[in-house]
Image (cartoon, rainbow over all chains, first blue to last red; front, side, top):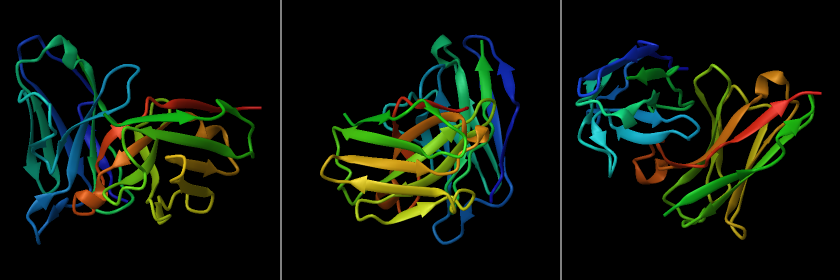
Length: 112
Length: 124
């Protein structure tokens, strides 16, 4: 199985600042045939299910603010949240969909 | 708006069978554009994908559960279900059902709608 490792486990960022969350996969998530990276990011607020934010490493889901951006390729990926807002407090998860079984990172808790 | 709702017992005895149902509204489990997945979240652990079922009855299970898991779909009720047999305390978790965009996303499983989750505790 592909192991997804996020860092840090938690971080605190001031309002209006930038938050950066990393995710490393144990094997490349880049398919050479289509040049796509098979990774998604989710946001999970307390008491709620995860919400899809980004897929194909950098494509924002419809309705997701452009403060959220994804980058990276191969085995190293980053979720960046610009201009941090109070409502961004959540746990963020990365997930690969390269091939089943699909696995998630352990989650990164973002606080203000 | 698509909505999913899990239902089932919140307490299961060890060695018994965990059975959950997910009712879909605002969408159809008969669509050929989606898989229907189960994902769980154990305390202090990351999310864990259990598997998916397709409207045709086709399914794919996480090999970690393959010997004791079963999923099915009931198109007449617009529901899909999970059965996990021989449960232990390690199966205590919040169980989510989710819509999987796989068939409409080039076969790539991303989860765009989720139920609220249901807590299942395995204890005698």
